[in-house]
Image 1 (tube, rainbow, N blue to C red):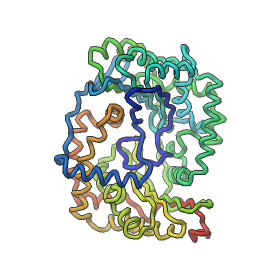
Image 2: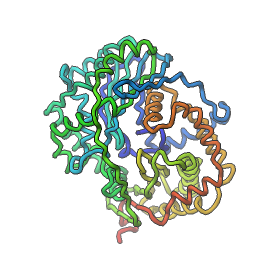
Image 3: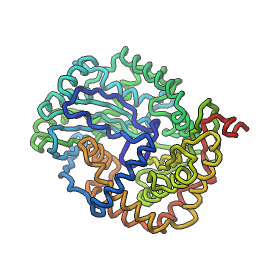
Image 4: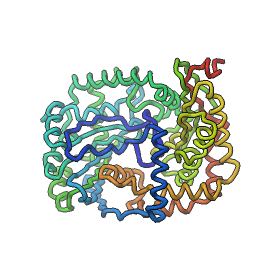
Length: 482
């Protein structure tokens, strides 16, 4: 997500999507899902940001949020509008509650192909014509799907608002899902899946998800599998679209150089025509591996890619903020985290190491992800588990607690410092029901966490003796052939 609420997200967990970008004179806004993949760079950035925060911001300093209006339209579309006029852009993000967890069995990847298909042609334009129009405007239009939801996003210059909005609504309400374009999309996705099999981190992540989630709706890749994608037909995509792409199953966030009056006159007439429908209630049945499991995959590579993890939490878990602080200290805080200090800095064993919770609408995972020399794999795994045991058995120090709080509170404004980030943030706040006062509440929620609470949640949510261990390595060099 993508996403606002995670410290580090492997590529295989991010929302997958299609982006059509024109040549914007101001440069492309980063996608809301974008994250720093390189942990070494991430650590350096965290150190720099921490120093800046220490000298340049008051504790919990947050620039004033632009005013935000929330409206529920007669067709039950939730509309979030934020007037932010620092740049002559308007950014839109539409979230549909139609992620990959709603893929039917045997049609894994259907949500993904449906989201991709929005931009492959409409009743008025071919995919080529859509490209040309966006290029002419210097606008960007993208669609993506994650495990919980799909999004359609547009960024357009204010002077091209009318044309950009028309194209956005056309893609949303009049997609034709051309047969030949869908076939090409399936072929491209299959090629990407094949290519990912040469990436050890991707192999490890997919194997971890499969081993942990079993038959859970979170257990398959968002983009589907080599087996499922060829089975998905255009008819199935049209059916999925007609089932879920309705106003009463959506959130639209609008941020930028636009007034309430312009929203009323330019946007509402077309939004009002978007029909409601009865959305199927599909129960989510969590299913996690209950026993420890080790999966070893032999590859002729020089460094081992390792994941250690188990079941995690959902975003609405009341202990979310205590877990956020605890994880920062354990392995989410870059160079200031315990795992990095112990495994990388002191012993030089890992090229990268991090821990994170990956919460969704429903419980996700907890993971420690690391890369190390094949010959160091066993030692690095043992040290990671020892780090988890330690935080479960003793209170963190006051220095660690205050450092985590200072960074988490002080860095919060960086989530809102571009129009694209602010749009994605407000969409997620609404989707998870956090309330429009969430930016004001956040610093209190973090600041109120105590050492005792961290100890309690570590004991409750970390299970070092019941983990899924995935190792992709040269198993002979790692001494793990047996």
